[in-house]
Image (cartoon, rainbow, N blue to C red; front, side, top):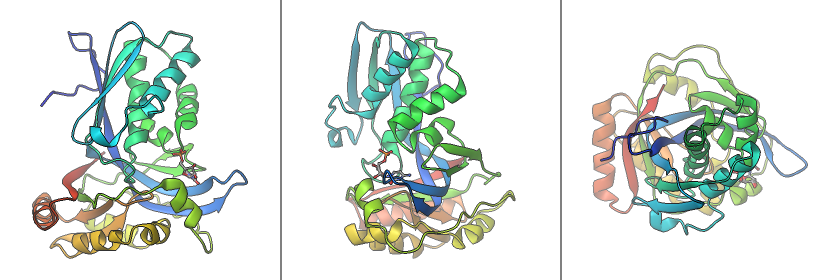
Length: 297
Ligand code: C5P
């Protein structure tokens, strides 16, 4: 496996940046704006599994996709990586000269923010390659233009996310609990899930205390929800099967869908429990994407 060194140019002149999966530990929908976007309160964290983006100097802009899920992306010019590169070049007043490679390890349209994390990683990798010094605010504005989840991915640490995704506030320490992510291989459309949401809106549910154990985190999350789970289930009833598969495993403290689905996460008591659960689920569901992973602090 190639070693990923965050944002540091290797002797070959290639820069690598990791694009970790994001997990919405809770996601409350607080309201809906006139333009159709929804106001959110979500606790977002990142895990130790993800895509990566690399860039090297080149004439013009080229883009290739490798990795187990490369086939799920067309490689078309509307890919968020290409859009991020062109937007950054335009904002910085430079030519978009780079050969970009995306290693796609995360399932597409699955609620783990793969596309958003790829876009954020592209902004970072190209700032290094092109030696740009854009301010944090300007970068955050560019990120939001690429998608509502891109600012939190650019931030890259556990955070409360508000507004439609642009308000980022670091969260208290969540420790580094072990999780299992499981996706049944059905893509879910984020706009369709938001549009299918009905009923009353939720309240914000932020908290201030650090959570030192997975048990404490699970107890606090149990009082919160993912408001997109019900509408997502109606599109993809298999989500219930995924939640049941996770929560029936020994050591699972809480199982919940992330983002607009269909990926679900299980929060586990220990590394051993998470690894055993992932192996057990993968054995009976060979077509699912299942990984044991750990929260990044
Ligand atoms: O911003 P992004 O392109 O990732 O959002 C995809 C879709 O998800 C939007 O077009 C919108 O329908 C929905 N969305 C929303 N409210 C948010 C984020 C996304 O309604 N805060």
